[in-house]
Image 1 (cartoon, rainbow, N blue to C red):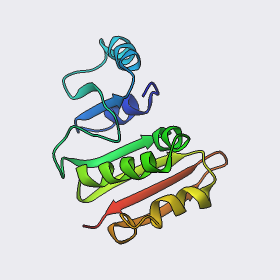
Image 2 (cartoon, one colour):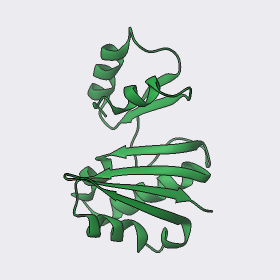
Image 3 (spheres, one colour):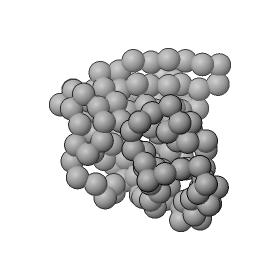
Length: 140
């Protein structure tokens, strides 16, 4: 997406980061915005979060800042597809950081009561004044 979060994570990490969005316009804007500040450790890609073009167990962490909120407005199937894809691409022990402005009880229920997820995640929850942050650990 177009937030500064990925850049800030990159600044304090030695890990490679892939910035994704379904919008090619957003990705091109971010490439241009960060072209002088990034190295090859940040990649940019147009990605549909319901069909992530990566191998299983490819990532140690996935950060979602509002994506699930955006697709949740369309259809519950998209929410489940997105969550399934996140689980598929995370390594065992990998972390899914979910930042959501949705009502905390509803979002937690979306994740933890899904038949796909309930046995697959350990969930830690943090509330701020304006959003919910779930840290989900992939346990399978």
